[in-house]
Image (tube, rainbow, N blue to C red; front, top):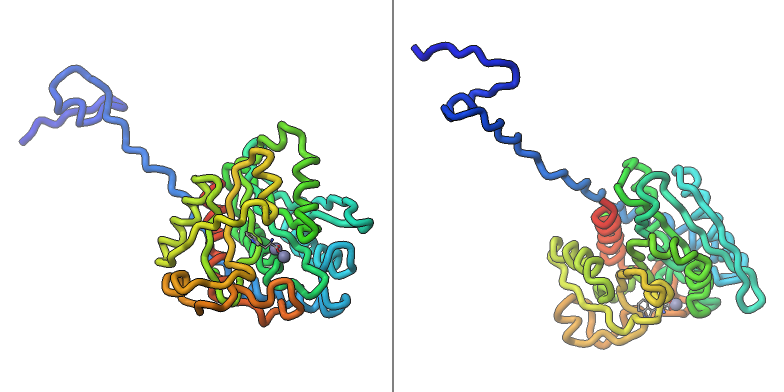
Length: 314
Ligand code: DTR
Ligand code: CA
Ligand code: ZN
Ligand code: ZN
């Protein structure tokens, strides 16, 4: 029978069996920190926000454009949801084309404020219509992502901020006003700006911005994970709210499902949809209503947004 060995406190059998001098126990293997997984974003919730934005447009002259009552009512709707969910909200006011515009900024308390992950969408429509795809889709998707942060009480390492821009349709006026209002130090604290403008187009393409490589990879990894091919968004430079951030040296990325361009047969073969048809035949038109949304594209892009916010903030 093996001699019973009385172990001094803290001496492990492994040390004794080596027969040599006590060289220190092998450190216990440390498990890699498990990354918190993003929750599914219920597309029904995103569509409920779109229904609210549609009602707001209908009650305010048919649009949600800069300087009109429909825009401020849209902002008030989004702000009320975020205030109720525990976000710290700030409204920035500016003037463009002799009309008052507003940005809404929402900070999720916590995280390292020297490393800010900022997700943004323009909330304004053109005057021609309700702007449900352009850009209620992006606005509703980041709103629901922010609400999911609250529901799950997500506490990431980095600080989360969300923004709804005014007057994008006049030339990225609200987002440029925000960037210009930041000190250099505060601009440098933004580790990435994620832009979402038109993400529910009826005849969708799945475009990923080709700006910051890490952000681009994050989105491409998501789509590869669900087996959906993507295309690099190349002609978007300067055409939405990521432009002022990119000009200021902030890493940017984002998603886009297509505007008025005609989908080529190659794209149709790759992603489905119909060649020869515009991605969104109601682009900047009065028919950009809640009927002008592809639910699958809206769902996939909303989930991709959550995936990126979670992945880039840990
Ligand atoms: N300018 C945007 C729509 C738009 C057109 N091309 C791109 C590329 C990437 C993002 C957005 C867009 C608008 O009308 O709001
Ligand atoms: Ca979903
Ligand atoms: Zn537009
Ligand atoms: Zn837009």
